[in-house]
Image (cartoon, rainbow, N blue to C red; front, side, top):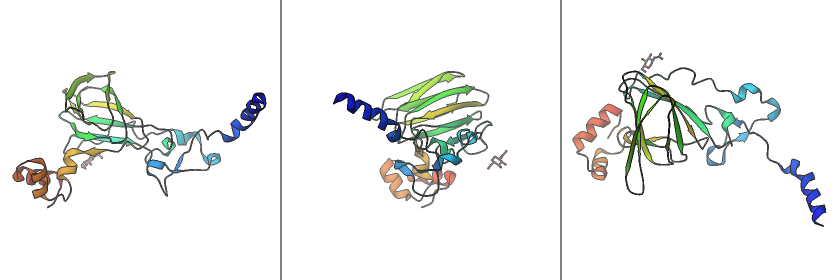
Length: 208
Ligand SMILES: *[C@@H]1O[C@H](CO)[C@@H](O)[C@H](O)[C@H]1NC(C)=O
């Protein structure tokens, strides 16, 4: 009986085996459940290659830095594979402000320059800060507030990888000061002086 079951399993295995990939059809439902698959017969090698982070992102902005995401929306081949990547570019003085990726751990490989980075634990608000240079690797546990800043005199860059095709990105200062969250409530819930809140809203494009 066991032998028969084993044979059945062997015969059935290929048919019930999931597809090797599911290049996303980005139109339609996405989110946590992922996207529908494109017809595998029409998928080519080029669908598995992403060329958008060959060059530096544009760092001419308020943070002197650029995050170029390579999430499933940019690279549909990631759909269902449980990972994604991004390129960070930090001009001298550049900073990726405190932010979280709610859905993923992050691993950072410095590709040029010197980066000071850190994260804050949720359990005890302990801060871990390190300076990492070209070729060195740092990890940021899922969901924790963290930052990266250029600690050198030249441009710095890094490639980060996430264990989710949609890690999410929420920048703390943008959440507080780049929207219509009323100044009175931002002040009341953060204990920051309303003059500071108004000033930061002005800088980051917030209203109210
Ligand atoms: C970089 O961004 C700035 C500000 O938006 C813009 O003025 C500039 O043209 C951009 N540079 C390139 C090379 O795209």
